[in-house]
Image (cartoon, rainbow, N blue to C red; front, top):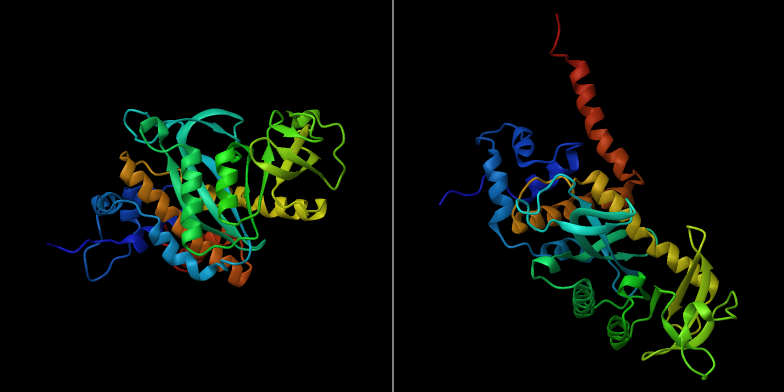
Length: 331
């Protein structure tokens, strides 16, 4: 049996260098010439379909970059836009809410568990939401990733997540691992502020700046905060840390916002939305390799201070300098 003409690193480095087109055909056309024949686009197609996608490869690369007893774990999801894809021809494509577009759009939903210490943004696990196709729900993926993180020895200072994941079962799962959590709650969550009965959290009359300890229905005591939202409304935060101050809550919120920065990075710098492959296996593998390409850009940023965007631009700038030194198209 002939050895494969390309491997994961060939594809990862292509994703780092590519600027607009991220197809297997483009990957083949960009390969440097050498002693061996350059791989055809079919070689890259087979690469994406060869093995079942496995997040262990990601973990092997990032575990040395993470301090498992420090930092926070942040969990959130994003929609990878596939506006022109047919649900019948491209697997995993369904309709999801998009925070970017503020409406339901066609795409693939990606759920990520990110570790951060306020500086580094390191994805350590991910799942593709495929409930419409018979897969797990978002909350099942949430608990699965928390369990995997606990097995890997994580002892985060906090676990941060959005109100979508603030179900009782999820909160109790984080508590069972001995982890503190911080999340937003929807305005209709029931709390008991004075042992006189449950009320919607939005009905709390007195919530000082430093928060207020109340009993969350079916869970236990939590500290809640009421803060202005970015759209001019009100947000309700809750934490299992009854001693958390507003200053620290705001600090953790800022760290949690790093996952949105990460989402922009994988979309704008790694072509995670741009693959044209159709099978679920190939899409998942492309997503895995795109995330692994982000890790290399992030490590470079941490070592040099050069942004992901400037690092990618420098590749093209060097190519232009090389061409200008020896122009080919002349009269």
